Amino acid sequence: MKRILFVCLGNICRSPMAEFVMKDMLKKARLDRVVEVASAATSTYEIGNPVHRGTRQKLAEHGISCAGKTARYLTRADYAQYDYIIGMDDGNMNDMHRMLGGDPDGKLIKLLTLCGDPSDVADPWYTGDFEATWQDVNRGCAALLEKLKQEL
Picture 1 (cartoon, one colour):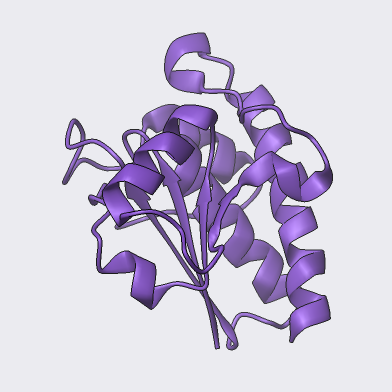
Picture 2 (cartoon, one colour):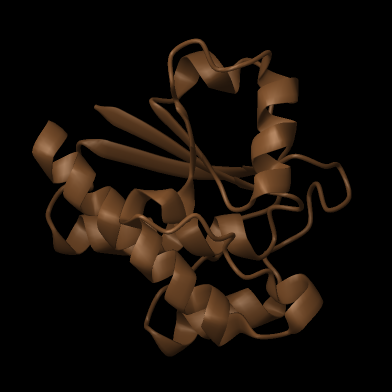
């Protein structure tokens, strides 16, 4: 069993989008029983709040539900529980290193680096452009799926 945790600042836009896109990709690839996926925040701003309506709408356009998901905080214990902890931008990566006490096992990855792109995932909280985030998340998750297929 592989375990993946997607992380962003508030856990209401980018990381839950990645969580549910990845779950959908895994289900279609028939790997959903061997890979577990979740998401978390590096801040406490949105803890307990549901997924942002723009993210919910973008996922629903593609037949993906995120019903019941609420924001949760990244904890130091998450480092031991997950095989990959994937941040959306450089700020997330810095926060994850600090919050998790470093990365001795090489588990921390910035999402788009998986497809050879050093860019940050577009943040719709600031831009309002959920389509750009959708495109970034799908590219990164598709690359992660290929990585997982090689490992499993």
